[in-house]
Amino acid sequence: MVASKTTGQPADPFARFALIPIKNLLPHEEIVPKRIDEILQEIKDTSGVPAPIVVAEGSWVVLDGHHRLEALRRLGAKRVPAWLVDYDDSAVSVEKWPDAKVRGSPTKKAIVARAKKGVLYPPKTSRHKISKTLPQRVTPLSDLF
Image (cartoon, rainbow, N blue to C red; front, side, top):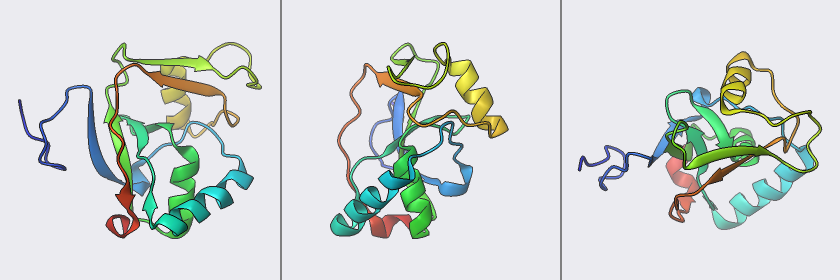
């Protein structure tokens, strides 16, 4: 097993933790502005990010954590804690939230294509589920600047 360059821990072929330059990340959904204030306050109160965002490795598309990403962007962070996952792995599935404002269920291919074009879905359109466990991990805010 190969050791991860970012953590020194054994590399997992499905997911690895990394601090990703914020400028590299591509959202695929819009955010709900009133949620940002709540998340900003939580990050400030704890001086940390309670959970890494989830990103498709290679495409840099944000799968989960758009609001945490935006909160960190507003704080001026240079990096974002992320689980980089193999988006093609069957352990990652996507479905539509029950109250989503779009027709049909978004597909992985459509999500990546829209993110790359900057054509965002409305908030809470896609719901990514991961059948493998990603460990809990709090990242100190000081690691992100």
